[in-house]
Image 1 (cartoon, rainbow, N blue to C red):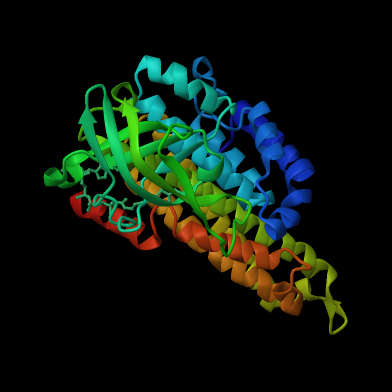
Image 2: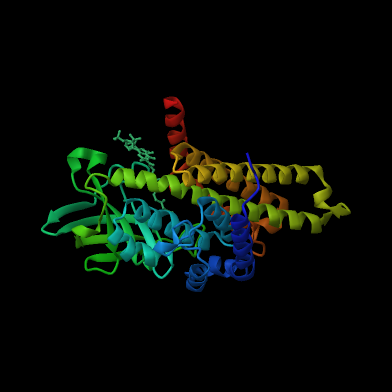
Length: 380
Ligand code: CAA
């Protein structure tokens, strides 16, 4: 077993870290305050190959492995969790299903612009009545000649207000339940597609989230991704990869809590010495560092399995579960170490805490990750 990063992995780490520290971090507080979409950072990430890290070069990506993707995600999230999730949805939830299930023509038309960052993608699975129970889709798609007519509402869709393309899940045969779900590549600019309410969130405020309303949208049959009825498997496969990205995002947020708390603890003096000299503070820092390392090892293992095309549902769920809960615990400790200064916006500790929370919710709640893990170990 080798724990060293390869030369390519070290290279992307250094590149993403430099970019994140120089370009992203100085804007993170302003983005959090205003909720502004960081268009200029997304453009820079595209130029650096960060919008399609693990997509082969022939399809517009950087042609790296999934460990490189996790490494880059962590670095961007260390600086700004909002910018990181914009990147993660494009990489994991838009590019990956096209790469895995798309025809050659679909890859050329849709994957190339997404992976190169010329366009932005989103993932339309969640509905008002279908969150954790992703199989209970209500959005209907009815075949009409060489189109499908689609009606329904998707909600909490990350990137939707800025997206060009949506990987859209619909029900083509309600009788068949999850086996009646069908995926489409939706061009967000076509007639009948409306962006609904923009959500005002607790954290990741610069990542745009809204509903998508679909009214008699005519999607060409050639835009069906996979066969009719394959949609649930497309969604589950995609989320197996997506959860690695969110684990890496959570690790980046946790690292932000730790690094900021460490710097503060070395400077802040009470009772005549830096508070870092007190064992009460040291133990908090030690726990944060240990849990971050454990989370990273879990995320790298899941990414390593994905690179080997091995089933990684359980390992991705473990990585996302542990990393997201680590980010929350680190967020709480980061604030505690800052004392009163942790509770005010002058310091970023409270932002890390707010940003961490969503990682326990999206791409499957912690309860859903436990369900996936339990179902896998019961089958073993
Ligand atoms: N890969 C391939 N196939 C899979 C699979 C996987 N990972 N997981 C399940 N399947 C297959 C099963 O083998 C089964 O196949 P058969 O019918 O042929 O036997 C079928 O799918 C149904 O499986 P289950 O009975 O386990 O399905 P379920 O209805 O009990 O649901 C679930 C399973 C894990 C709860 C699933 O619904 C789930 O993951 N829910 C959470 C949804 C989620 O993560 N949403 C996130 C939205 S996107 C988002 O958050 C993006 C963002 O904003 C950043």
